[in-house]
Amino acid sequence: MCLMVKIDRYLRQTNMRPTTFGRLAIKDPRLVHDLRRGRELRPRTVARVEAFLSGGPA
Image 1 (cartoon, rainbow, N blue to C red):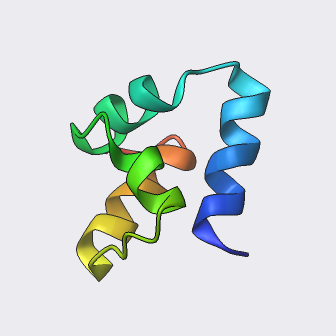
Image 2 (image 1 turned 180 degrees about the vertical axis):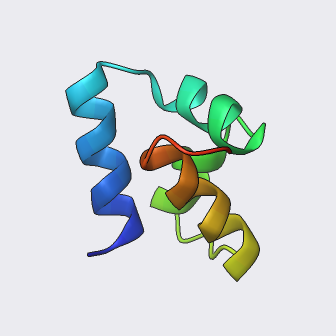
Image 3 (image 1 turned 60 degrees about the vertical axis):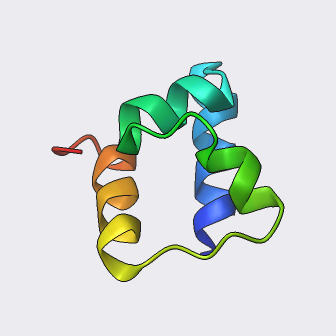
């Protein structure tokens, strides 16, 4: 499943703002906005976001 789909689902389920998500996941409040505009993440950053989504260490 696409990372952006997982993030959008998480945002809906938790009623979290995209800026809050980015700040908590990787300390980047523009993360979600930038991903929606085509930003590509390095594998290490993807792993950090995935860990945050699964409740592990960010």
